Amino acid sequence: MTVKLYAFTCGTVTGEFAHLMEGGEGDITVPIPVFLIEHPRGRALFDAGLHPDCQHDPAGRLGPRLSGLFRIGFKPGEEVSARLEAIDRDPARIDLVINSHFHFDHVGGNALIPNATMLVQRREWEAGMDPDTATKRGFNPRDFDLGHKLRLVDGEHDVFGDGSVVCLPTHGHTPGHQSLRLRLNSGEIVLAADACYFCRTLRERRLPRYVPDREAMLASLDRLETLEKSGARIYFGHDPEFWRSVPQAPAAIA
Ligand SMILES: [Zn+2]
Image (cartoon, rainbow, N blue to C red):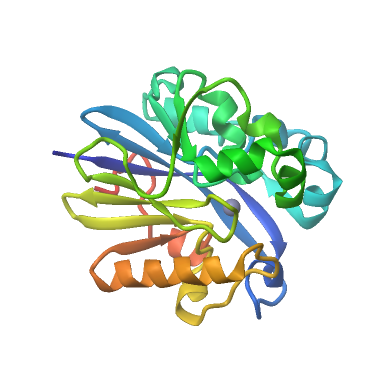
């Protein structure tokens, strides 16, 4: 069974480093990754990046709080649909969008993937559909409540039924955050997403400034560390230094 993985950078976000990692100094610009997974039984994205409106009116799209915290670097041609078209993949023929969670830099691009089924943890969906929780967690239903078919899962979930692509619950950053474990010919990879922004988040347990559930996040980091010790390569969610070592599409990671 051959699974292919491609990585794209769909813009950047700049903000205060200490907001994203305890002890960080100054500002940091981080990549917004999107992954394409090609499996014989279907084509999936893991996360979808920013909404295209962020290219011309980030404040209008994100609102005053988020646009006060982050400066968006996002040009036409960097949105997920353009990235796919650049390697001859039709955004209308993506079968699944697996969202790690409902923050704007992960789910905004769902709007550009019209025919996919959205696969998320049930807990995340329920948090997103509850107006109070959504506001508290910084979720905007306009990003994800778009009428996509839904596949809501509880905990670990084998996406294609053969163990090659598995959702791993890594809650804490948000109520239903999930990471993705991939078995490629070259070995095992875990796309951590925002369960682990940086390499140092894992090595030094330096958490972001605001963590809704600290204990759950620490337990998720323990889980990632265990996977790493068993041979998986962890892909950190927003680590610019790490990201420089990742082959970008059109090259496949494996
Ligand atoms: Zn993020």
